[in-house]
Length: 333
Image (tube, rainbow, N blue to C red; front, side, top):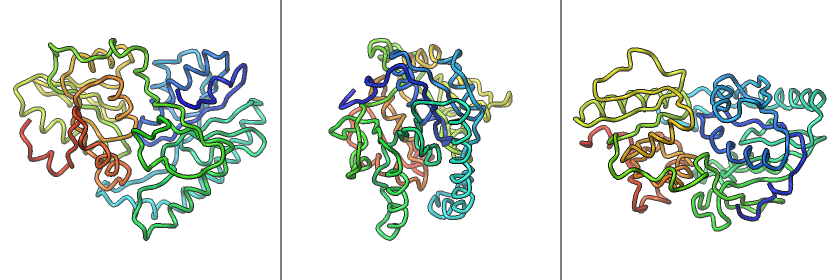
């Protein structure tokens, strides 16, 4: 933890909600929730059904309140800017409606603090509101200055910004640049933070590859199909972890073990007993790999500029190999 305000929060009731863009935002709030619970705080998690199912692996006793996710719709062709622009009207309406719903939650639960992970509408004018984000400086092209301005306006509305990185910005790089009031670096946030020895890969790994499917639809489905196609060509055993909504009984290959939403213990054992992780190049994945020390093949989601920037930032890492999706299709594992 660096320059952290978390330990100063005690005996408070906190409403928390993560963005519904894959499970990365859920995963990185897990250590934060643990730290807050250790300080005798009460946490009420506002989330959708898939997020709740995942959270319950870690916090079965916490109070969960149904809270609708953002209406993201992607075509899956890598044109993120166009997809976002097509969704801008519904996103703007959702933000306004979410603020209204948060006001109702505040009236109902009387919280001391609002904690949002990249949800710009999960904010209150009457209760101190904090956002968790490493995307303070969007890596978009210069012509897209409106996206940068809108992002800054939305972030600045919060009382504090918690950046999940070290003060040296070792893992987020220029993404976390920017002069904001009450900006704090809280250190890397990973659910695998108990003990590095606990997760350190076994030299006699049971599986050659561990595929981890994540991200928004349809990019997660595309990655799943790609992993199955590549790994079934190998003579070695592999495992693929898939989200609950993508799992079905037909996902069977003789040399591939496919698991849906494993609990923390099983997930940790799979990491420990797999030589190489194959996944998207999301920021939460990078924070997890720092802790678990696995070798990795990281495939940036096509067109997602944040992951493409992280590719450039970490491409010389000794244990991680970044490769674009088109090239991954043609390599021999």
